[in-house]
Length: 159
Length: 155
Image: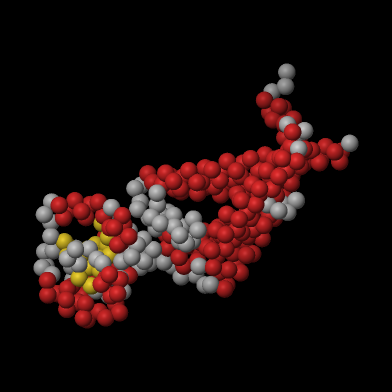
């Protein structure tokens, strides 16, 4: 009595033309895609994206709102361009951007208390400004309590 | 079944499905290839790839989407293109599922950030499964058509 492997072999033999064409076509496309990807990489060289904060340095919108509701004092820092800040921002936020660092930092230092958590945000998930500003603040103020708001202004407005 | 795909309405349906899939994949691939930095940010925010593998995904996936979109119209490549598109859609669904399970509040990056808002996982998964349904129907149609022409040649 033929075993299951015999049945499988028979099935595969019956579909040999289709299988051969599928594998040949897929390999050919994978190869062409590789060449195209190489060409694309040559035209637009790679640069590693800078994400907004490492896992321990991020804060979700829901958690941020919960902390505010629980009475924790958070100093919000808006790292978007000034025009975007003026159009709307998280209540109580100060503007601080690398475009005009010293002016923004002066404004921040006027109201910041050393035990306060600083939360920096920019436009959304795909902007790097909040991560850069947070890293610079950690460095210049010498504190670790500088977090990045996950999803930025876009997420803040959506929740 | 092989007989049933001879009908004109089947052929027209297959052309429409092929057109829809190749437009979606062609557009997605092209947009991401034109702006790899945006796509890199979207892929990196899933926090699954970094360094070499992130670069591989950022350059290779859009290129594969684009060649598969073209391959769907090439008689000898369409089975391969269909199979790869099915695999890509399964991989996308897995990535979305993982991001959803981890509670990530990120952007899809499906179309290189163009018109993609924050993830609405239900909607994106539904879209992915609809495309997967279309792609698997087309793969089945092409599979039967190839088999039919092979058996005709053997006769």
